[in-house]
Image 1 (tube, rainbow, N blue to C red):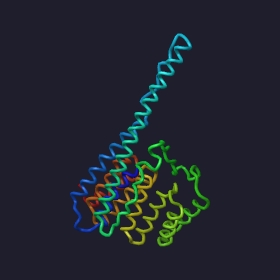
Image 2: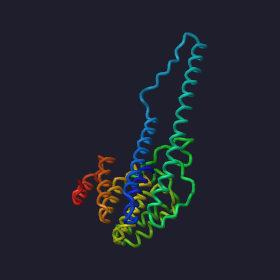
Image 3: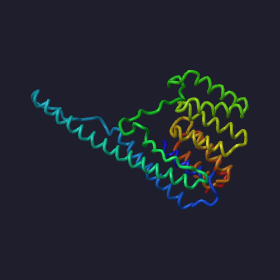
Image 4: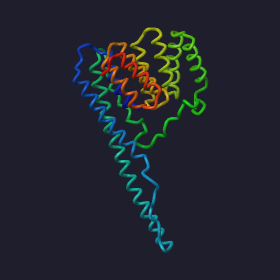
Length: 274
């Protein structure tokens, strides 16, 4: 989710920002993001069914049954309008909060210039009008999602360079991939592998940014646990131990069945996380 990405963006800002930043302000931002995340999770539960529908459409005559159907339709219409208004309110409020947090985070980072452009509505441009279907699971094969011509081949070429240990070529190819195919279904994995290539080059700071971009691109996808672990480990190597421990701890919280939980736990032990 994008909210989860913003939480980690705040963490990464600490890693790259000035040494004299106001920690209380960052704590306030984290608290506001937590509240916003809870509201979004509550909204998501609105789209879960509570049991089999059981409308009362009985009647002894056709006219009575038609009246019952009409009454049921009116009831459902009212509920739909109420839920739609709730969604609109949450999207509007969440978007305003995110815009405010982006501005405040920018103020904390030296040299940051806030663009002033309108914040993308929470959940995307059409979030207030439609419910976006779940993203396809690319772990079961990229053939299940629509890719641009040459997209898979370009990704495979970069992945092969990484596997061969040619970190510079891999990092360059993956950066080109990200620019050439914005919004690609492979974006999360591409950024993850780019971060690993940058780690191989010794550029831990930029690697952390790539891991963050990977997690932000798909915070619930198949590579999200690995991206979150890699981000936490990178923060630890950057000397941001407190933030590293928090991030690594989130691996087990968000993805309790992932194989990276054990890896994250080992990393937390090496950092002496409490």
